[in-house]
Image 1 (cartoon, one colour):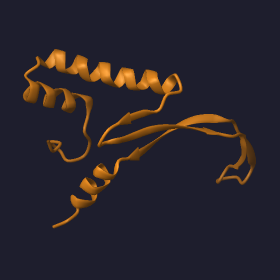
Image 2 (tube, helix red, strand yellow; image 1 turned 45 degrees about the vertical axis):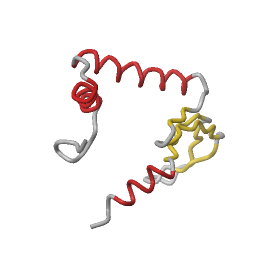
Image 3 (cartoon, helix red, strand yellow; image 1 turned 90 degrees about the vertical axis):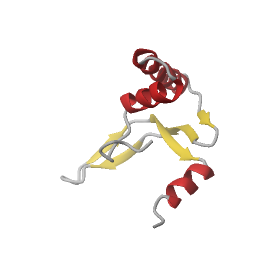
Image 4 (cartoon, one colour; image 1 turned 120 degrees about the vertical axis):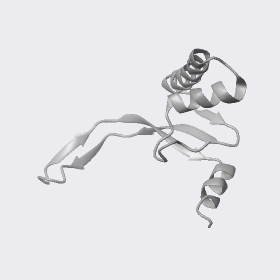
Length: 103
């Protein structure tokens, strides 16, 4: 389902697609989208990776503390250790996105 304005797919867009495709009420569809996103967020916060077959994997990476540099002033500042989330698309998603550029 293409996004109406062509820029960003939102929670509301996902809920609307569920409403039209599955026949759930708009409130039920939005609640389902919220529950799925909450479960994914909770899993990541608990240190679990999230894998969605034929879509991709959300991976947790721990970054060590390092010395960074303020690009404006050149002053060195410590950057604290942190955990970041990265996304690795599946081969199927990569192929689909690459194919969307074909004429």
